[in-house]
Length: 441
Image (cartoon, rainbow, N blue to C red; front, side, top):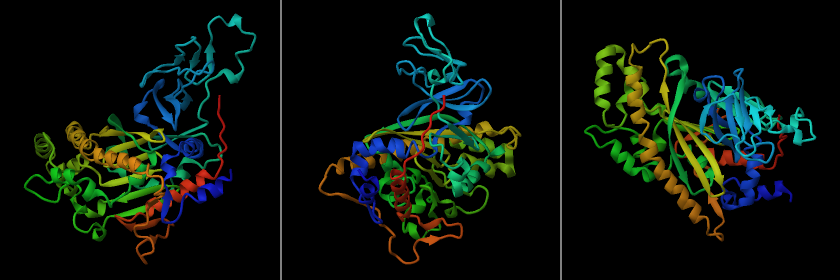
């Protein structure tokens, strides 16, 4: 099959074919051409802070153990015994210097090297041969705590891959004391739909007032208006917020221009949450003139930073998209907390985190469920096989609507679909390019 011609017919400037969401063969190819070719988000360093700490996750469909080995090196081992293929680690996270396969007892160091097998005299082979070590992802790198891995030895460096998206990531981190956050527990959701439906939605400003009407009502149920995402009401394209495409499939929805540039303005937009008043009062009484900045840290940062193919940094969350099947996806919303090692907040970090944890309950429980319902309804609708096309042409052909900035990135009004058109071009490019996949042992 000539894949270039095949995928050329599936992705057009204004539309994509329904089968990119429904065809199991295309999904299988994505696991190599997308998840095997680019840098895929795996974990956050704060989840494995000490040597020998690990967590289990997936790279595409491949089960992996992300860890710091005994020497502190970040690794991503294939969670698959070299012997007969069983997973060697069944726990979600923990600390271990070795992993023993529960099936036949083969044991490996957390570097991946085979430590030993039971009754080796029954074998004629030399177990010092590297082929018996656990396979592992050849390139694992971290950018400011975000750990990525790629199987493709020809991939650019992680910094080059992130490109212009590094700036909003830096800004997202630098607003916090010490320029860092730690990952806490997560809201875990599953939807019966293709993983790309979530990524297509990640910078979509067109759906908000329709899909999230109940959330908007809840956020603005108090005496004051203008809370939460209320800036989408009216005519959102006339608001100062915008969507930006960075290249390599990454994009950005920046709602910060809607917020007055002064301490406390972000907190004033935060919707009501149970129990927030007592902590806010404590922060004001303790910090006085410095309270506004602390309260802003408790509020949700109005950005969506989307790193292709599986990471979205939005509000104070780290969201991860995990494909399970052509029509099934896990969506995990990890909460984050501030760390105030230099005591910039005069002992109020715990109070800030208490409010922050509560504000981070809001969207996954009251907004993401709306999105997941949409994704499932799209997947059901795409079963209408004679109606072949999914359109993404909002803003296309309107002179001056999409601007190319001096750095080559594209900027458009908040409801424009330029981000989807561009990441679909990147998807098509990757699907017609064969990665140089090499495993290390």
